[in-house]
Image 1 (cartoon, one colour):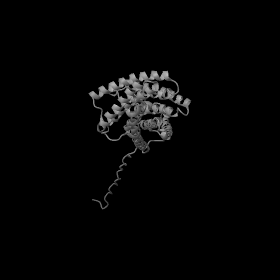
Image 2 (cartoon, rainbow, N blue to C red):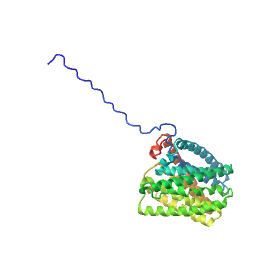
Image 3 (cartoon, rainbow, N blue to C red):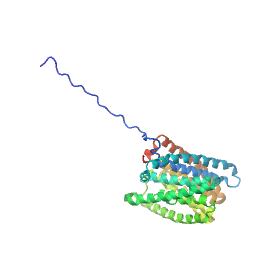
Image 4 (cartoon, rainbow, N blue to C red):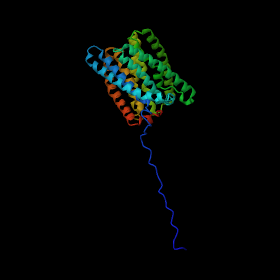
Length: 340
């Protein structure tokens, strides 16, 4: 043995990287803006239009400023959200294909386009030419979006081809156009849209009913069932505008029947807890309120007023929760939004 033993090699401490952050930071401004911000914005547009409709009833003109204020504020919110989202396809147009690959993306994109139609309806008393232009642009965009979604579903996996309530937004959403077109004098075009969309909605209702009977939807997707209320409500509203009061009343009763059914099954409908898909509860509630006021006489006025109050609380709360998730950077991850 030697008096000078060999020194032991130094041991470097192992490096353990910190865990990833719970909130993903997107690489740049608005690079993961989620389409899920638009359903609650659409619900706020519907709320403003419902208050406008309520204010048009005898003796209720004092509440008119409330509806117009809501519509003005929501229009500004929508403009900001639209700029934030459109920065993604301006960077990479193919991101639209990525968005429609997931259900929240399809619903959000459809709501984004339909909100443009509702913006036209909100602006129609003040700028009719601009309102007409917005409706035309939105109609073209909705047709293009429907073609893309149809192509993606037909070429995608077979298990993803099931009919969902979101189909109403994509393929029956044109029924929003007559809300602007009829007051501007385009009754013939609106009548054609009305009857065509009734047929399309009937097919979707039938297919959805068959699927519910044969397969119970998973709990996280059940809030989307509320979307079935929206087409019936809009058929009632447009039916009144086109001069079909009996048919409009029938659709309004149908819509209210669906509302009662969903409220009775609220535990089943909302059993998964809050999620961004609760945006699907907002615009049908507002649409049912407007339909009741216009199509069901004095009794419908009381029902509609109650629904307007309910929608004021529900739509505002859901919008705040969804926008908070967006501000915290969590909404994109929760809804699997695409990144550019």
